[in-house]
Image (cartoon, rainbow over all chains, first blue to last red; front, side, top):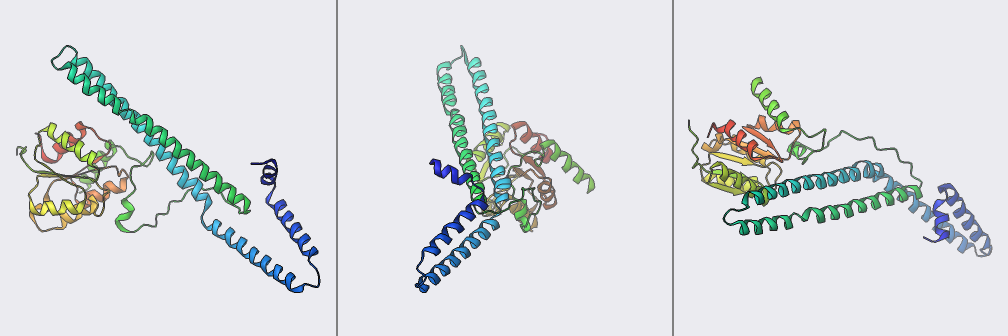
Length: 204
Length: 129
């Protein structure tokens, strides 16, 4: 971004609007008064431009930028963090098991063959590192999208309320049961499920 | 009544990795006759032509979910109507458990799970083996 571009982007929306109006007025003043057709033509085009800008502001407003940022992007990054954590934990368990296998195989028949296979498991576990890096890239992409939405909202002068969450689920029928893995506190444990099933059985 | 370890078991999941894991665990437990399906429609076709002693199914699959498969099994007037049915799924909301129970599920396992959990839930449904 050039110095001029940085200066422009830091100005308030109202100042920018005032500048645009000043520029347009200056252009109109310079138009030859005898060329009424040209003036009318310019005015019509300016009016069309205003309609386009208003429509764009309305369209962006209906996109619910606060929901994009506060719900969808936030939710997506939470899920990605959960993926990294879960794969890291599972990989740890796999490698711990490999260690035990190697210990137990020490001195036994087939030790070399067992170790060879165990090493393949270790190598395959490196997926977790690559997966984690790719997920970090995706998270950064989401951050970029979020920044651009913020910038667009700011440039268009749209007032956006903070996303406070919504509990409405407008899905019908069995669709409402399709939510995928949950994060705490929505997710219930196996113990909780067992208790719930026991209560339902007791209730008859 | 003793559990027939030669019974046919049907496992249903759209992730081949999960099918492999469950099949392996069942093999460790002593169940060697395990068939696979990748969604409710395929599973329903299988139960119609072969008797199963146990069904272990995921929920979230397309075109037919495990929940819909369960409902159709329980709604039928055929012998497979009463097949023991265990849901193994990542759907972990209370409303899902309640809905599955109302639909006639015999037990419910939330993913991720371990061999011990699978064994204890199969035992709870079929008896000691």
